[in-house]
Image (cartoon, rainbow, N blue to C red; front, side, top):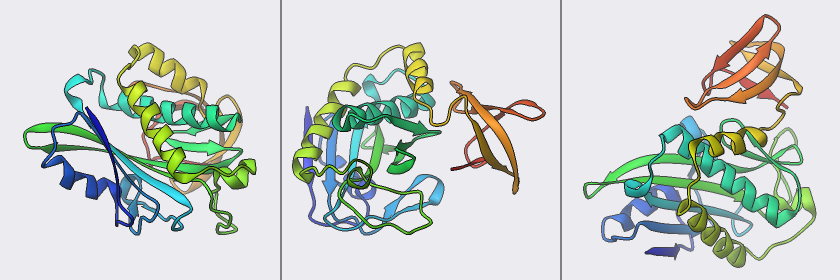
Length: 237
């Protein structure tokens, strides 16, 4: 069973969806709004979104049928969101490790995945903020939208329904762990390219080589290969 619920406005879809899980026995529940006022990102970051221009969407997934580690679930989620947008826009879309979605060098999707226990059942709460129609961003921002990057406009309601159905289909058919890793690594942003990183407040050049099953990224630096966890390194682009 699955449901897709709509709120005209809410503070955070990841927070609001928890209320519906208290009274629902579906394995999948989607909740969305086009006016999220206090969106949250990974590791305490915020996610700002212009009203009636973008999508804030959360999907609660019962973990009863999820038999892969949390780190791979995060990778797989980023991959299927990337795939949906690549198919829709017919443009190259990349994943900036660990799970930002990049279209033509601009971040168009932020993803926040949380694990919650409700009524003795455990759920992944997949929150995604997708910039769809917004045209103006801070000049120094790395953010963009589908419209700014492709020039194409999409109906928000139709987009949401198609997005919801696509995620359900893919989450009901999770591939092998090796396939997940291969797909994720094949779409890594700036993989095998010389990039500038900030490490412990110092900048140095490096080349992203691959992400591993533990959730770490391996980068070839001037003094050899080294792995990092999120927030230990920042890619400057």
